[in-house]
Amino acid sequence: MRKLIFPTKDEITIAIGQCEKKLLNKKLNQFKYMPLKEGYIECIRMMKDRILNYDNPEKQFFIADEELELDDMNRIYTEQMLPIKKLKTEIGRTIAVLCNDFLNGQDDDKIFLSELFIKNNPTKSIKKVIDNYDKKSTITSTFGTGENGSSVAR
Image 1 (tube, rainbow, N blue to C red):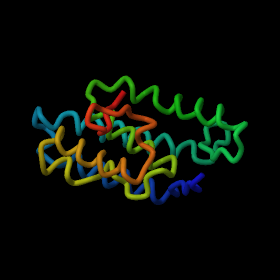
Image 2 (cartoon, helix red, strand yellow; image 1 turned 180 degrees about the vertical axis):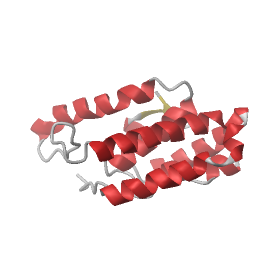
Image 3 (tube, helix red, strand yellow; image 1 turned 120 degrees about the horizontal axis):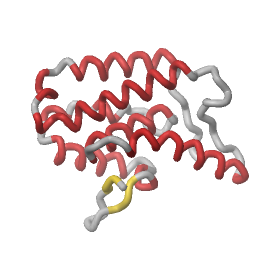
């Protein structure tokens, strides 16, 4: 099992600033970019919540060192996904899941902050980024696999 490296408070604060900077982009007020805006707003909420609970052992994320802890890890991950499931768009949920992976030490590259999402068609870009992420990650456990082998949000 790969050792997860959780982001520090400073790294999370920097990522919040990067998300907030993205929200200043006037493109995100266009209808076709609203799913991105929804995702970034949820990312900011999740990261601020993580900072508030950073030192709270009851709300703390953790690494399962033994098989016995796998059930606890799955329960915590499921709890983390509950607010994300309420988002209205697949793209918004995808960005939020990628942010959650960053907060859980699974995404060192902060892929949820990719510039591709804003520069291009969000739907095509998100699929391209996820396909690249699939090659080096376990994102398919959070997402299902589509007909052509690419990831799709559940």
